[in-house]
Length: 190
Length: 190
Image (cartoon, rainbow over all chains, first blue to last red):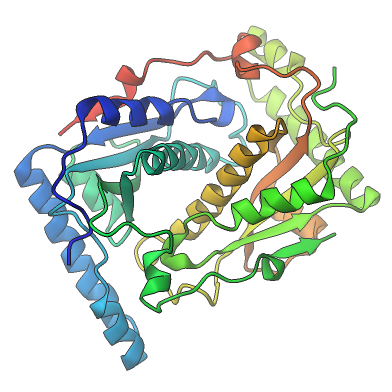
């Protein structure tokens, strides 16, 4: 099973997605996101091998056998087939923003990177492009593989491409892993 | 100066925003977001007082006097005037999702809450509603003020309302705190 069709993403479209991401809101307007476009085949292969190893380890962590087999049946990344791969890091000590809003919540820098990723994601979907966010990995190991500065934290490893089988329903719901649940169960008042 | 006009947000619109947020992508489809609508005046007042105290402390943290004065001149929250206030928490031990994707990156649960917040934010903007994300606070103290379960982490305290002075330019840019910087400075290749 493939997640992505072989169709490449046009350079202009990729640039548009990145420009949209850079318009995301950020704490103190610090814009702490750092995008690394992964193009070197050997680097890609190293990332895919790392995720495969972490995935095998994660499968072993499910005590329930049916759940473990269901996990193994999922295809959880498209790192070898996606036409584009982006790693998104957070600069934990950005010059921009002058520290506003992070004295007690330094994690706001990382959350700001997530708003950029989600902006890119929605801009991608609006163009028919799919995004997979891979998190079955050791963030520090990925930082080493990509040779980034020490102060950068990996937030996301993203696969981008045109979906092989477009769908409005989340894949984990289609495959019976986890359905959407009612908003009412997640809404409270004080 | 007011951030928000006095116009209330219609119940139906608020519900629409929350329903949009609940469609956000999440790790393992765990939907770990927990929305707390703050309606009790005494609770609101307690939150505003807490943020004022943290804000005074944060101002004292700027060594540079000009920067400290610039910080003090900013209006950094609308907790006393916003027609709606939402606190968003992450359930760190959700039943949904069955642990998929969080073995090595448990922070993915918190990041998933940020995608929900940003979805709500964009849905709000599309309706002319403004959102302020307040982070000058102690997350644990806010959890205590709102009497939520121990396993919930505060991700955001949000003020919602119609902007008193709508603008396409971020307020921190208008006020000379921090301008947007070029994407090119944040884009790398490997």
